Length: 336
Image 1 (cartoon, rainbow, N blue to C red):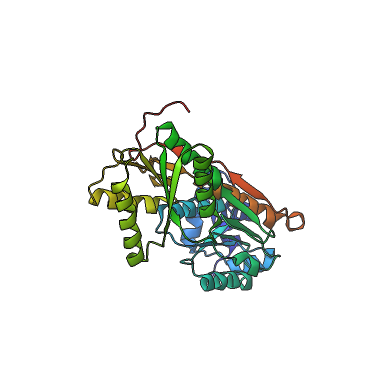
Image 2: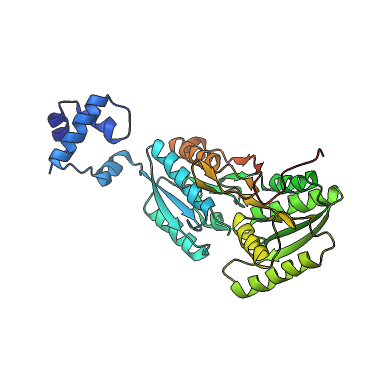
């Protein structure tokens, strides 16, 4: 079996140059080409286990996420992997489906395998069961104070949504969102929206929405919302804010099926700001989270912990959000 010295000899470069190439460091273009040809010719396979024993540093980072079906989590996964790769680490994707036992199992696996660190999106109290000596960054929720948190300004996002309705002359607002009080981000979005309405003379009604998987209860509450809108004397002057774009899409389809028109009869703003491609944002009006920045900051915080374990600083990073106007709102606005 060939080794690094054989590759260097075949490529007519130094062993150090081969090592730099394999570890993602910059080498001359002609040297990189020679090394690639040598690796293919010799069928060289790097022994990462031996490398790990030698360096005492794993190249792997575990990323725990509820799912990758949602465009938000899909985009977040893409950017986290991209920034980890830039830093010389590899992502191990673990999908929890919001199952606390699965989350705990992934953390146990990460600790047993001595991975470099963990980045997690968990709406449970997962971090209370993580050994404090493993590098970890939490996205959206971290209740222990032992680990760094990266999130977006969910509360202000709710305020912005209500403010955008006010700019459009809407004085009767509706919030549709999660009943799960463990989700601090969802609670913050609702609080920001309701507080702005109450402080600025806007009427506000809230509807607690179950998980989209609960079809029966979802149908019942949706019918209640539709009936409320149809019976409202302010039809045509109503604004709905949903805690996610998944709920926004669900409500939009239900409104259209019932004969109500968006944005003529009711306007809708969601939260997340999905992107269909790196250059194309979905056409809904929404509060856009800085997903790439969330990923970039999370990786940067984790790398800092990995590289400087004796200087770990627990951070709380709250990134700004912004409104993106789409076709679910009337976009001629008045000065506030």
